[in-house]
Length: 347
Image (tube, rainbow, N blue to C red; front, side, top):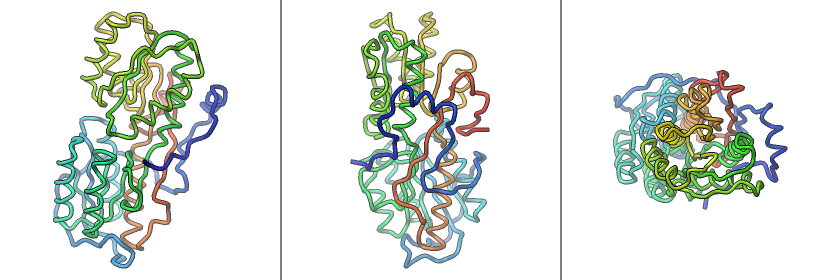
């Protein structure tokens, strides 16, 4: 199993609520540059790899950094890729951005391609905590260091860095916002993410840690919508028919939450509170419009930029100066502060 996130312990509804006014991006043990999420390149020419260990470090910047993420159709993953590419170019690297579409076989092929093209590093938002162990090991064995973002793998000592959002902390913030929005009572449903993604389970547990403290709130169903909006819509249509008296929907990401919002609209259901996770621009717009109550924003750009900065440090010095497992705290977005956020970052 993955190592635990640096998550505040024994958080109560009161302490969680009190933190909402003082939330800020907190990168545990890291110093990073400012946030930006700009354009990216596709495949570009390469240079020879610098190698994946301190003994083989060239001490010079330059070469190809391969950036591999899930589908950029999800704005979170597009923001990751864009931010990583922008930072890499600033530091003097060429970039390629590709998507594995959550297909482990395609991910393995893309890592093979990065190795064959002489990549000096790979920045990866992986396609499964277990299924990605072999491909990451393959890159390491080939002398190409891997820097994981957003999702961990169930093995330590293979990737150089594993930089993820503090999913438990963010889920507890979202759970508390959900309790407040629903008044702490009533039947509700949960939409969960892919079972192969450790983030799905961590977020679901974080929700339960808070909501479970309110006995008048009853979870009548939990359905996976695999992080997808259309699947969220379809699953929500069925759940509305089965449980017409629900007071709220809490979702493991904003994409599924927005699918739920669309299904509720189509069914003419009003007053049902919806809370998501990610802090996507579309979710923030829905919060401003009164269609969602809150979302926990995870700073996609910051995590991706930090991975590139650590790749640069590793390439040029043979070390990052940071532990392998690192986490970044999330921020709660509500109607009161929604205007303060942009593309997965505070303005």
